[in-house]
Amino acid sequence: MPFDYTLDFHTVDFRKHPELYRVGRGEQGVLLVQPYKGEILPHWRFKDAAAATESSETIYGLFEAYLKAGDFVGADMARKFIQMGFTRARRYANHRGGKKYDGPVPDDKKGQSGAHGRAELPRTTHPDVDKVEAAAIFKRKWDEAKVHPEYVRQKEAFIEQYGK
Image 1 (spheres, rainbow, N blue to C red):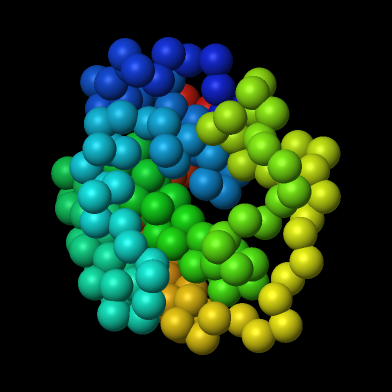
Image 2: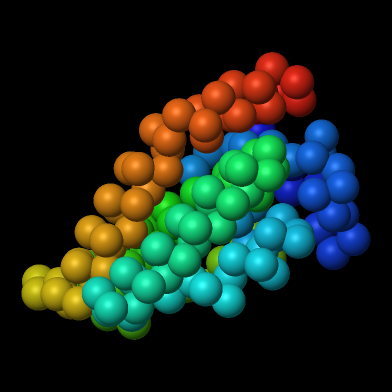
């Protein structure tokens, strides 16, 4: 099932209503799903290797705590923030200032990832080495998270109970 962008994300507490959560694809919903966004976002940093190391380790600790508590939605959101650390650091490495697409996000697509018909801006010929290393740090944690045995078990159980 696709991620449901029609929900009222200002009022839904996904800890109380996990049945409304959808795993979706990639990072879908990462900046919308509460209370997890509020718990994880303050720890999310990728400006350089030191920030990425501290951030990825802290968020991975949250990931493990959510798993231990049997809170798959929290664990999946932590995994999404780790994934987003990788993708955003790579974007800033490849595109000065982090702007990947030409023009603004269409009003009806805000909060959703993708080009939405916009052209990709040219990549820099000299990627920012700090951002490249930050991305690599998050990538290692992301790879670890997505194969974590308890995460895989809880994800399968969640999908069986609520759908993908």
